[in-house]
Length: 133
Image (cartoon, rainbow, N blue to C red; front, side, top):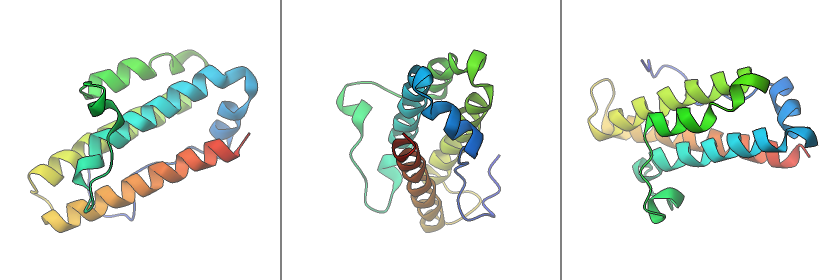
C-alpha cells in the first residue's frame, strides 16, 4: 500500500538492469519493459492535472494489473530484477489511480501531484533506456 511520503513513487531500474536491457542480445526484454512502461503510463494518463494521450485506450484495449503482469512474465527467466521492478511499479500505479479517483489518504490535488511525479519519473526511465544504446 502506498504511504505517499516520498517524492516519487516510481522506482527506477538500477544501472545493472539498464545495462542488461541495453545489451543488443536482450532487445526483446527491452521491448517488453518499454511496453510495460507504456501500459503503466496509460493507467495514470487521465489523472494528471493536464491529461495526456493514452495509446492503448485509442486501440480499444483496457489495461488492468493482470494484463501488465502477464505481459511482463517473459522477463522472469533472464531479467528477474526487471520483472520485480515492473510488478512494484504496477502496484503503485494502480494504488495511485485509486487514490486519484477516490482520495482517502491525501487530497485530490496531492494525489494528482503524485501521479505527475510518477509519470515524469516513468518518462525519465524511458529516456534513460533510449539513451543507453
